[in-house]
Structure formats: structure tokens, C-alpha cells
Image (tube, rainbow, N blue to C red; front, side):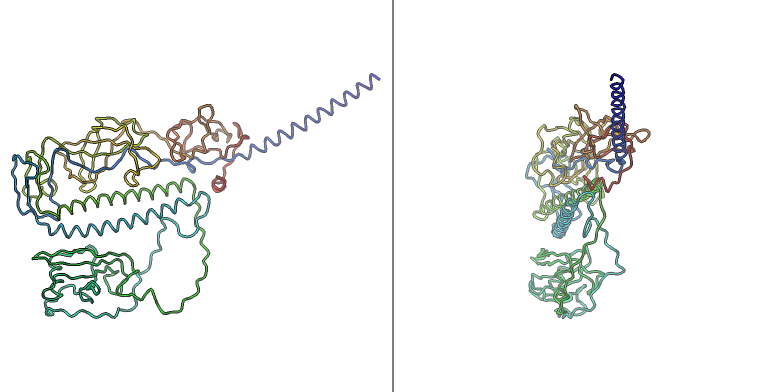
Length: 537
């Protein structure tokens, strides 16, 4: 019986070893199988080498402090200078007189310019909103942002010349004005119509001719100016403006009654949009499938459009500042002293220097100042006394200033109407410049300070690629022999879901994603497909 029991025991031991071997084999098989399925992706494909935001630059309006500089614009002609160098002046004392005729003309043109820029801003904002609806890994249907139009072989023109009746002039043929109106009676309902060249001025001579053409005793004439392709009656309408010309005493002026762009309201071809031809049934169109963008590409597209919007916003602010000065010029032909002080400079208005420097400078020991803003992440890098380069957008003049004050209270509201990141707090700082700086009050300028610290080779990745454990940050990177290794990362800013990588991996590395509990050091890797990656995010 003992021998029999020994054989049974041996048999059970052998069976147990076989079962254990099978289990170990299964575990090894599945473990090996999971390891070869770990995908890695180039950091260069999923990251951004340069972050889109630079808080070291800002914009602001130049203002004067305890001084007044009087510049001559291109629309001002001096009639008489009323002060001398070294003279003491009081607030309200007249400094010079000038003619306002050209200022009135430039005022109307500036208003048209601002309206066009506001239309551009609206278009860019709509394009940005459309880009923000796109998702990584999903095809774009229909029209694409920043889509370049296909070049046409030649512009489209109307087939026939419109049937219009030229107005009968009240002057002799040899004295007929040039260009003569195509049609119209010079009234609000039936304005004179002109084909006009872009940026061509309505000078005093033209305004005089168009009012005299309407007849003796006329003091008001309305005209419609059309800018058309090829300056031709059959060319497509680009824009049009309705202008009222007025004569008062011996002065002529004009005002804008309306301005339009596009050919929706073409006065020469009013029936083009309402033909009597039978309407063909509209067949549904299948939208074309556009490209598939990655998350970083969509972010870059948004950034570029935001930069475009910021540029337009700044241009509008500069144009409105110029418009404000033109209104002041047109309102009064006399410049008065704003401060009690000494006249430090009086230039000859006929000299070339008067075009770039103040013709009159009154000072009581002041200078210029301009307020900028710095983002919260760079606030600890700036200090009072730091040098700042200030450059005017209008004249291009630049001067060096000093930070005089930095506020510890952040700005509130939609700062700069879009200039800056809404998710970041901005703190105002004041830059002071002495009275030798060649600036004008009301100009917009850029402000830039250069940090003394060395620039890093940092880059940015989506925060989903970074893991956190016990207060440390790390990622799984493809190492030697195409095996995963766990790397500790040195991270910086975390903004808009993007994390700054300052060390631990480079743009040349390959990173594992998505992370799962089966990813471990030493696991073999394979290169993954970006399309599969973003379709799963």
C-alpha cells in the first residue's frame, strides 16, 4: 500500500507541474502580446516648438505730462505763429493759427477707412469662430479657413453698357468739368454718378466745379462715386460712396451720406440680381471632404487668426486716435496752450524739420508716458527702473523709456478689446520718457522689454501627455532598443491645456499615448498613426 501511495503522489506532482507550466506560458504569452501593442508618436508631431503668446510686448497710447508739443500734420497749413522761444505762456494762450480746409477733407476719408477696417474685423472674427468648431482628426466639410481663391484668367465684366442719360451741363462744352458725371441731376434722389479712382481726393477745385455745374445759386450737390474694375462702366463694382458737397461763403466742404462695398447695390445695373429668366431647380450639393487637422495645427490656425484680429483691432484704435485729432483740427483753427510753461522750441514751419519734430514745444519740466501691460507669468521678471523700447506705430520713431511704476492690481474687463489672452491676468505698468523723445500725444506705440535671463529650448505639448505622481511629472518615452522608459519631466507654464516642457524630453523623442495600466518600462514600442491617435482623443 505504501508503494501505491508513493506512485499516486508522484503522479499528482507531475500533473501539478504541467498545470503550472501551462499557466506560466499563458501569462507570458499575453504579457508579451500586450507589450508589442504600445504605440509611440514623435513629440515634434504632437507638440509646439514655440508658444503663441509673448507677454514681453505690449501696446499703449502716448500721453504728455507737464508739456505740450504741437506738430503739423500733412493736412495743416500754418497761417501765423503767435509765440517765440523762451516766452512764458499761460493756459488758454493762443500759440498758432492754421487753415482747416485740408483737415476737413482728410476727416471724411479717415471715417471711410475706419468703416472698412471694422468690416474686416467682423469677417476675421467669424472666420475664427468657424475654426474653433473644427475638431482634431475629423475631416472639414465645405469651405475652409484661409482658403486661397483660384486665380481667374480675367476679371468678370458686364456684357453691355447700361442705358443712361448724361446730364445736360449748364456751362459751355469747353468749360465742362473733368471727369464729367455719367448721369444724374445732383439731388439726393438722383445724384450725379462718377466713376472714381481709388484714393483719389475731392479737392477744392473739383468741389467748386461740381457745385457750379448744378447751376447758378446752387450751394449743395449730391454725387455718387463708384470704384469699378478696370475703371470701366462695364467693370464689376468694388465700392461706392454717396457724398454731399456744400458751399458756404467761399469755402467748400463735403460729408458722407453712405458707403458700400461689393456689387449688391450696383446703381448702373440695378436689375442684374432680378432677372426674368426661369429659375432652375436647386440640386443639393454633397459637401467636399477637406483635410484632417491635428490638434497642434488647429491651435496654430487659431493663433494666426487671433493675431490677425489683434492687428486689425490695433489699426482701428490707431485710426480712431487719428480721427480724434482730425476732428480737433477741423473744429478750431487756433492752437491754445494747455499748460503754464516756457516755450522751449519754435521751428520755421517751412523747414523740413517741422515735418518730423514739434513746431512748438511748451514745457514745465515734464515728458511723455505710456501705459503697457505684462502677463502674470512674466510679472516677476520686470521691475521699476527697467528699460523699455517704445516705438510709434504712426511715425516709426522709437525712444528708450524707463518703467516708473508697476501696479499690483490686475486689469479688469476685456482688455484692449481682444489684445491679449482672456485666461491670463494682466498688470499695468507705466513707462516714462523725457521731453526730448520725438513723439506725439495720442499716438499708439509698441512697448518691448528684453529679459536678461537666457532663453530656454522649451516647447509645449497637450497636458494629456504628461502624467503626475507624488508631486512629480513624467512621461513614457521610447528609449534605447525601442523600449519604453519612464522619464521625469521639468514643466513650466500650463495654459489652455498646453504644458511647457523645460527638460526631460526633447522634440526628437517619441512619446507613448494613450496611457494605460499595462504600459511599463521595458515594453517594446511601435510607431503609431497620428490619424488613429487624434480620432481617439
